[in-house]
Image (cartoon, rainbow, N blue to C red; front, side):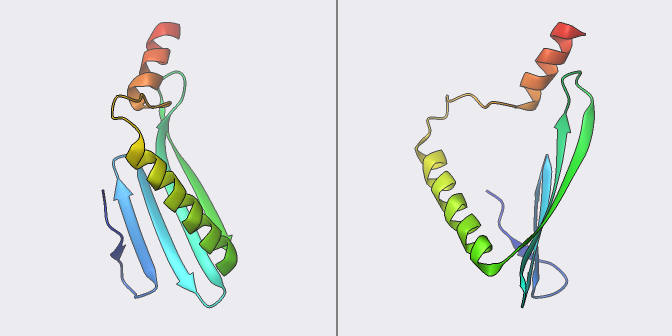
Amino acid sequence: MAQLQPASTSRLFSISGTNYEADVVASSRGVLLSVTAKNYDTLGHMYRGNALAALSLSDAIRLRHLLDEAIAVAKDTPPAQPGIWFNATVSDVARRIG
C-alpha cells in the first residue's frame, strides 16, 4: 500500500497509483482534497475524472473515520472477492457490446 509522501511544503501531501492521484492540503481553514482518477467507459475508452473538495476540519475527521472503517472491512475481505469495476471488467463489457 502506498504511503503519503510530503511534497514541496509541509502542508501538501500526495499519493498516486496506477489509476489515481490524490493531493491533500492542510490549512487553517480545513483540508483540501484533490483526486484524479483514470477510468474506462463502457466502450473501453479511457478518460480522466477530477474532483476537488474543500473539507472543514470536522468533515475531514469524519472522512478519516469512514476510511478507517473501509480499511478494516477490506482487511477482512477474502482475496477471491471480485471487484465491481476492475479495468478488465469494463474492457470485457466493451468487447461484448462492441
